[in-house]
Amino acid sequence: MPAPIPLDDPDDPRLAPYRAMRERDLVGRQGRFIVEGEVTLRLLFSEGARFRAESVLLAPERWPGLAPSLPGDGPPVYLAGKDVMSAVTGFPVHRGVLAVGLRGAEPRPGALIPPAPAPALVLGLVGLTNHDNVGGLFRNAAAFGADAVLLDAATCDPLYRKAIRVSAGAALTVPFARARSGTALLDLAERHGLTPLALTPGGGEALETLEPPPRALLLLGTEGPGLPEAVMDRARRVRIAMAPGFDSLNVATAGAIALHRLAGERLSRT
Image (cartoon, rainbow, N blue to C red; front, side):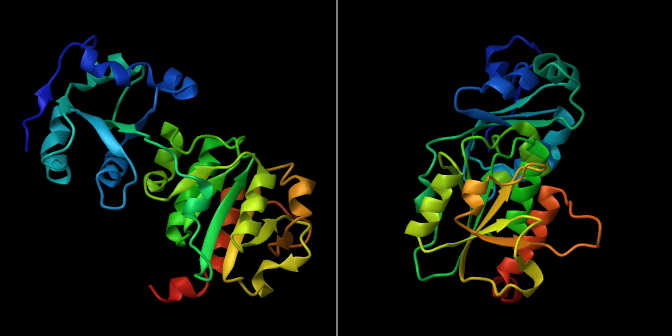
């Protein structure tokens, strides 16, 4: 394995991709994204990872424990004290583990859907702008074996630093792609033989008595307004039974319950 490269100057050009991380998360970083923390770093270099790393930045004391997880032919590894890391990123870095990932070309949504008649479970996100919820839903998708996550144009970036962290790294391994709108997601469902299920408190079918379709697209909308009526009109409306007088769940929690139900036999076979 190549030796790590010590850096002690915050202005070193090799640290430029890590600079002002919070601000650049909001405006993009030219096909790059930031991975933060040991769990997500290990996933970035795991067999199931979908992205390449451009570089790794570690506090010196983290190198011995993480070195076995990094490939010998991998990207350069830079070592910098946490004071240097904090000066570069613009906020205190406590974990001492960062990496820059490369997005690469985004796949076409239809390419991620298993071809019929094979079973399929796809999660569709419409208008979700909260990074915690999107990260949580990616974590749920990984836990319950969803084949892919499809996002409309309004849903926030799953490779935003916080979304990756909340997903426990699942955003790096679960296949995802974007469609133009919720309507476009329904068009995909129609072309690929997926049953669209719109999760809503006013659904006419109860999730707990639903016979999971062998090929399903589970649609989730933003908290409060929920899914647009135009989307729900083309889907089966499904609800989660709750105690009288209360009909609200966090969307990530609701998604976990629904994905667990829809996963059905695929979980019993693991």
